[in-house]
Length: 107
Image (cartoon, rainbow, N blue to C red):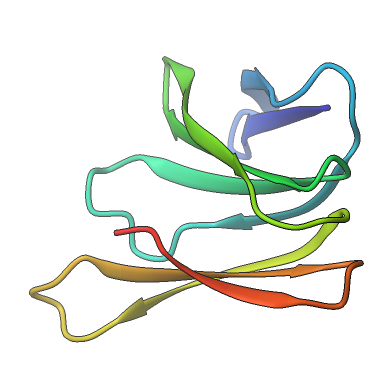
């Protein structure tokens, strides 16, 4: 599956990231308050994984990492910042068809 970055002013696609070749995308969230000027995207897939990508205007999307986090499809993802503005502490919540919810420290 692919994730597209769209420039709404120009109404055009500016970047495409191929997240996976062989499984469907099942959930997606963006990073709240990105600290580095990029858009960070977390994508859950049917093969039980979460993929982290970063997007910046006019720059090729970059795959940061991915990990297997559940025993069935990842169907829900939500990111939050914890603490005050001086910290970059973030948590990622994932939910799955396996009935579990997990909390990840992705700082």
